[in-house]
Image (cartoon, rainbow, N blue to C red):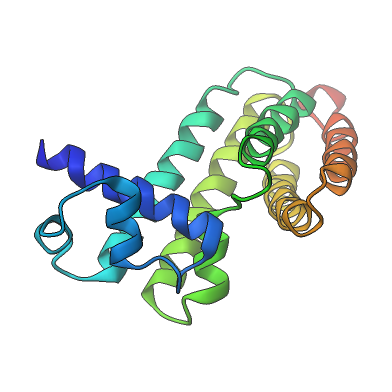
Length: 190
């Protein structure tokens, strides 16, 4: 049961980070959002807020990797569509309230271990995207470079969509990335 409460609190923290940022993700807010008892916070996260935020980031990063794993075997353009679809659904479902918890930490937690942790998690996403593109036949160097552009483009498009409360720019970015993915150099073209 204790693992369940820890995960519940980490998930609540990930959501709060994605909605409100690092500073607004307090223990009080996490307890209210998760329904966990007050004593749980120090029992499960004796290292304090940074330990809670790190757990939240890890769970979010793992969820994204899980979503990417479901895109195995698809074409490069379909990988772009599949990756973007999850972010689009999140924006629609939350009425533009939720962005990316890793971006929130990167933008507001200040320099230090949490920002470095977010950087490592972004690197995992890029590596997994790159592997998906390589498995789809894209040349290795092109796969890695495009994976980085895809992540940066989607993250920027999510931020703009939240600010504008519109999917217009998001859809333009995704369309451009889809076209670029379809034109990536593949092993068959060599």
